[in-house]
Length: 87
Figure (tube, rainbow, N blue to C red):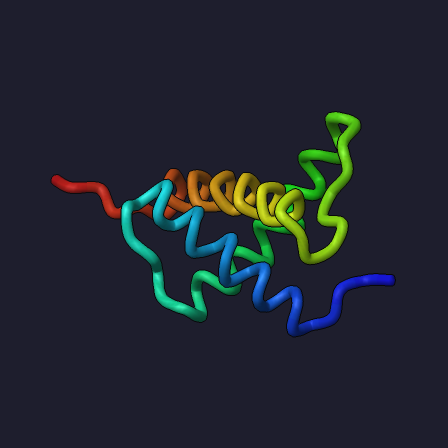
């Protein structure tokens, strides 16, 4: 049975907040952290599946780790593409 929307939102908030802290040192706001975490969970699941692992399996520690790794990747890509460059 899949996760419900509330579980995805909570997982997204936790993963997005942790990833934001790891990459930039501060959270990005509740809504951005949730969106980042949910996208990160999908990206993390894809990455783990490519290497023979399992993606997000539910609301558990393993899934949070997968989502955080995916969210960090998403943040790195975002910063590489859209970061303001000082002149």
